[in-house]
Length: 323
Image (tube, rainbow, N blue to C red; front, side, top):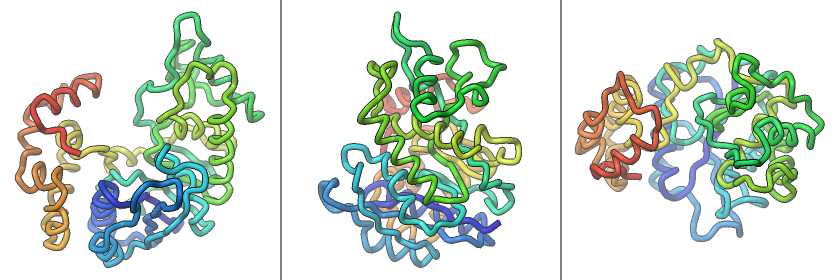
């Protein structure tokens, strides 16, 4: 099935990341038949110019991407993660795959057997939300209040192989990728429910931080409401052999696969991309000046620290944390 790709691009880091995303798609899935939309936010809810710089825009369009302007009416500067929610309304109402812009394509997405009638999302996540307070509500009470709010049955979403009152028992995604057959229907519900949770959280959520987790709190509810759930084995290539959601170039060098590093560096063989990249310090230092290999040498790829914060702290201490 032909589907479209949606990512967010705007002035600053995201415009550079969009270039790598689209370039890696064209390199490693040249037969991709859908359209690539780079959604560009704007409006009064932003300070300063959000438009993708002209050289980046020209390069993106030369690779076949479509710049898709949309206006933030609900979120914006105060919650930029809301871009992925509001941008859905600007898409053609055709099957879509949303990808965070800090993603590389490593092998053909066209080979993945998506079922767009059964939405799903990335399981590459940690137990970031909710934070259980002493004498406070449990995971089941917190998540149960959300399912109750929207008239959903939480029971089918539970992973019964996980212990009671353990975060992985509950449906929780990273919003780095998700998909569905209708961006219009999915986006309308995503926006309405996120806004409801933000402005009128159920009582068990009173002590919980929703910034920056609001999108990831709402996403499991929306996916379940549309008949989806955890990704099956047919989607195993996402976050592994087909895509790499690296989040920051220092983290890519520190912990991602040799294939991801090779793809990243191969993209800079293109003279036009290399010329643009020289203006962005993480690319100039870590890729072009090969600091990334020094950063990678700090870690045993077969025995990485269990907590990502340890990796981040090491990179910062050694001077390689550039974003």
